[in-house]
Image 1: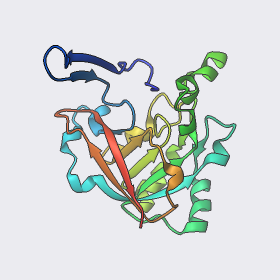
Image 2 (image 1 turned 30 degrees about the horizontal axis):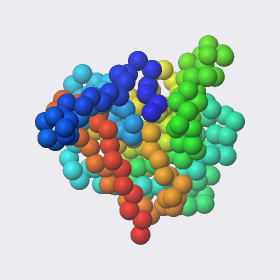
Image 3 (image 1 turned 90 degrees about the horizontal axis):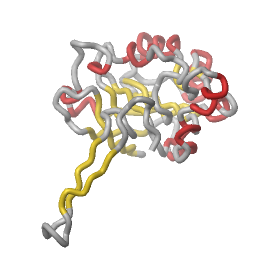
Image 4 (image 1 turned 180 degrees about the vertical axis):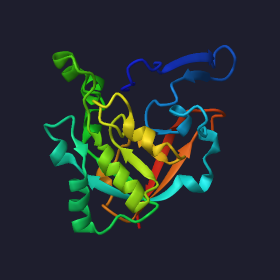
Length: 219
């Protein structure tokens, strides 16, 4: 599983065995931002709400899917722009307020090759960190101020492009307890509009985020 550089590895340990204790039990450990996950404001803000503060109703929201596969193909640092937004709305209509905007970049196909998923192999060649697509700060500011979106999701390891080591998009979004989803999969099965996300989390007390089970309901 691709894990953000420096984050703890996923670990499993058998603590009870059928032939010894009469039942089978394992313990596991993983970072709060490993796998498909939801980030909370406390990830970046000392006084920000933690993951256990998210109201259940905030974890159910309409979604729109923006297909960036062709634009991201061969451009691992691609960032969704205001121009992309205008093009998408020209075909599908204005993004409704309260929606979660999902970027389908095709990066999920690289999941089984962690170094390619994170773009580390490019970083090693160029000495320039991680490389994967995300959202531009200008487009996100427009989505928040003029469309009133509930959040973002993407099929890469973060809504910020891999080259943005300052996490500017995540910080802007999480000034409030919005939806910030990473490492999504199955976006190719969703229509551009009309689906509803149901986000299941571990309600970790004081958590900066949580692994998430994300279900999309399609009418």
